Image (cartoon, rainbow, N blue to C red; front, side, top):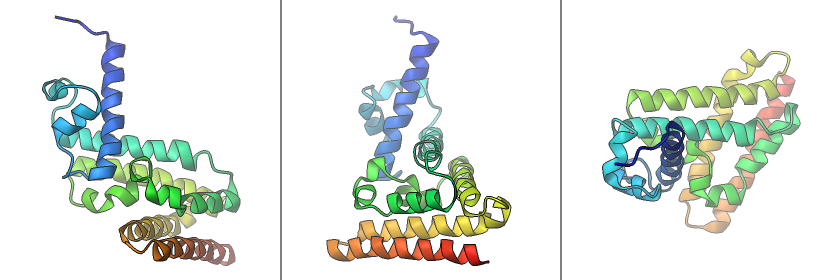
Length: 196
């Protein structure tokens, strides 16, 4: 029997989490079975329980990882202040972001299923969403981020819903126009905050 180092086991676990996050965003939570998730990671179905107690545990972990990655790779990298928020909004409503579901926003890809998921999955999402909205709020009202937290949550909801709708439309021109309108709506919300 081959013994793997602790580092190897951790790297393998992280590979499962990362590939599961991409698959979950592409096929949904209900549309992604354990066998498929393990195959994506290059492992057999039988090794799953060496890493996770259940599919629900993997889903909660993958959702947390996706939210953390979105913050680290997108939100944390954006410029400070309103310029950074505008940068985030324009990225979010890009056709590339809309068309690349598995590398895109976990909010727009999984939100409807997360609402019906286990408490640990919903908590993992909530924790990640709070980090995102705090990043928005710090840019929206640097002098008083707590006052901007609820508006930031509303902004996140508007952004995710608009992206979901754009992905669902078969009329490409209308879907593109919706993204442009999403940018205008989000920027109007930012301008309204500046005048409050």
